[in-house]
Amino acid sequence: MPKQNLVIFIAGEGGHYEQAKRLLDLLELKNKTNIVFLTDLPNECKMDNIFHEHLGVIRSKQGFSPFGALCYFRKAVVTTLHYCLNYNVSIISTGPGISILPTLISKLFGAKIIHVETWSRFYSRSLTGKLMYIFSNKFYVQNKSLLSLYPKAIYSGRL
Amino acid sequence: MRILVTVGTYKFDDLIKKVDEIALKSNQYFTCQIGEGSYKPDNCSSFVFSDRFHEKVNEVDLIITHAGAGTVYSLLERGKNLIVVPCLNRVDNHQLEITNYVVSKKYCLACKDLSVLEETLYKAKDFFAKSKVQYKKHAFFKSSEIIQYIDI
Image 1 (cartoon, chains in turn orange, blue):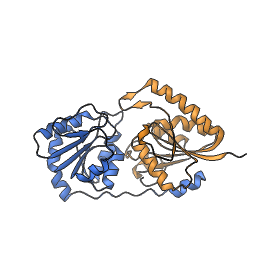
Image 2: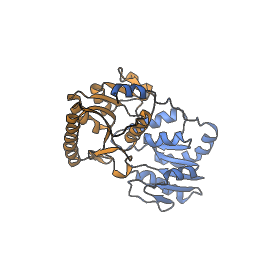
Image 3: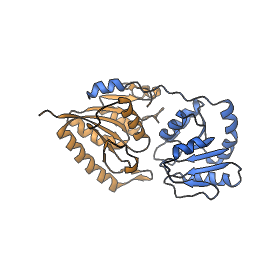
Image 4: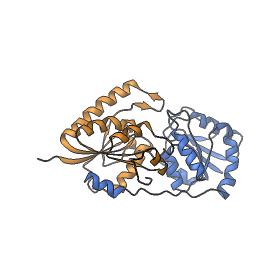
């Protein structure tokens, strides 16, 4: 039996999640059963009717958490492998760094990778952006000023 | 003037402390949303988060906000008058980039140094009466391309 298509959105809390929500709305997908969100968001902030996997928190607002990073690593590997083995996966990422590991694993399984660089960047590249630029099939920027920093990027307008 | 201060999900106690100092000697009505911060102001009302946040936004004349892009864009889209205060203790300075952008476009005022917040508040009335430019964005137009590409 052929594998079903699955779109994995990866979006951290705050503005990253807001961008993913806006993008999901704009895509106007009628069937949301083939969408999964990987996130580090608290439960109370998550959208209804969309399945979410909580990856853990690598970096709190106060700084890096080694324990959080270990939990994230395990959950990200297990979750991504599960989906890649059972579905035809496409990745849509709005950052931040929690996107990188699931993207790399999915890439090994031939997934299509889309990254939308964060709307808060105008004059410099984010670390996530630098890495996702290498691995993405389509890399969108929301601010035209970033085109000089990411020459192969596609300008998308702002979410 | 009714002023709402918001820090989103951040901890930005320095801003709340400064507003508390200003509120002590001001006749303006301040409300602070303090997020994950531990400092609760003595001289104005405060709350951590609220389901009524959108209503509170509608009730005020001016908003002092941290420079989280989601908050800044959402409030500008609603036509609110803002003073953007970047939280420069964050792990990187991306709040500074969006602050510089919105100020360069004259969408709002900014305060990068809390010692001049009171002075910025004095400037606000004049700025929003005369110089403010309405926020306009070039809206996202790549949805069809993405749908076609992921074939869903």
